[in-house]
Length: 249
Image (tube, rainbow, N blue to C red; front, side, top):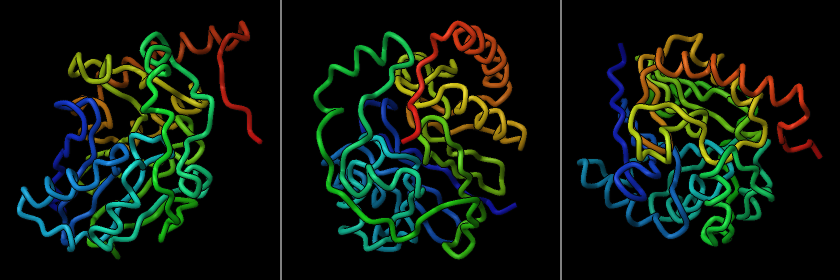
């Protein structure tokens, strides 16, 4: 066992938006919060006894503003390279997520009216461009970056050798973490069935816990049961032509 420690870094509220500090031989940060939260994340890393200048890598799970918003700022503050998937390169380079957002339900439709989701972040160029499964041993972490497309085309997760899955927005706690432990869709998905396929593939790898961008850690068996129900629901919508998904350009 590698003994990798997973530390949530709350960015908004108690768990409404999370980044994660992964402590192996070297520290790795997963996700970079909203625009303007770089200093807060930097200081919270230091609060855990880690020199932010020691960060080996900043992994961005996908091209939504609440996950890559302070990537450029954190790169400037720490000097750590930023990793992102090639399929989400446009949002990273422009500082703007692909529009329109595609809500998964009432919460997404409500949040879509929030101007903060439509602001621009400082753009960045990934120092590590991901196109497939990527081993993290060179960055001091016993784990892998796993492509998990669906939420966005370039969504990724980090799976440690201990069996922790830092899952980005593959799944969330209900109502942006307001109902802890209850699996739900995050507010938006570009391809709901594609995302569910990625989630189920990660569950087949037997993770012990899912650490998500919105809410507290989720039990994989509870997520597995939810995913079976969700697959039936989405399949019915798809058969009726009522399932929205982003078309590939």
